[in-house]
Length: 463
Ligand SMILES: Cc1ncc(COP(=O)(O)O)c(C=O)c1O
Image (cartoon, rainbow, N blue to C red; front, side, top):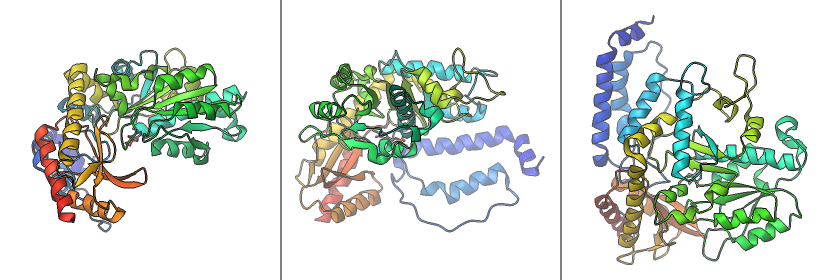
């Protein structure tokens, strides 16, 4: 055995203690850490030919890299839609690596069974009890799997198996959506359906939610040709919601597969005051729910839900003599793109076991309250204004005076440079703007006040 490996094995308990101490220091110091650290580009570094052992590697990481990492897991990081990781989720993630199970099949371990139970719990959070599901790496992959099944279904309507004959055997694939996330467009490219197949359906006036009447017209114009409809439950800029029930009802008149991207918006289901936003979610053929956003588990975790297991099997079947046959309850390797799979469910299992539906509902409700508070504070002195009402957990705002791309870029950089908070730029209805997204379990009203002060100061300094 390599000397360093042998040394680490002999010293394992003490080394793990050292790693735990580092993690403790990081986790307890998160709130005090500068929130953003824009990356400095460095040159290549020589590959270590002889290693130096875990203790030295840990010391080097803490000196060389860790100080340059952001506090994205902390309470005042509002960029993108970035969840943190609950204590139980961190523990689950540590043990995922420790046990290093392959959650592909049940031949040697109950890891896949734990994943099935966890998927059922997550389904119950969102009222998706008629669906089956599997863990994937993120919402992009969840959308990809949903659209892959949609493609197969569409082929079936036309008498073609895309899984067998390839996408070339399929004619045009009409995909209709109001304000889809960019990962939908990327998935269409990856699936050979093509980005140009997406037809943007007009949205309701001043909204990102699709105009259902215009959607019906677009379906009508297809003259009976099957289509894919992507409904959005929580748009990334303004967290607008399509009317899922009304869209689902259109299936009585038109043949289409309904995929819902509820990456983070689906969590509205946890809050009785906002649950109606996702009314009708269970009607969807496939649903995307991201967990590394609002469930507060570490990257990479999302679930894809489907009502069409047979079709899913057709697409993702991984047939080999040395692997299980897809009979009974099929192994996950037959249902998703990956064959060998990390046990991504364990952090979610830990967090749901530790905090339950109530604990996670509390996170969602507090985050929504924080978003509303930030919206009020930012607009108090007239320097900034909301670009859209705060509907759930995102504040989309802009400069009241001259919101040019240059001024918004300068404001973004200045906020990041403050170390107090981090928000990301966007363009909403052609207007440069900023978004502050709340999805971290740690965020308090005090954090909101500190962030508001930093953002307002940066806006004031801009003049
Ligand atoms: C609505 C929506 N869908 C999909 C995604 C893609 O998520 P991921 O980065 O986990 O792939 C996001 C990310 O913000 C999102 O907001």
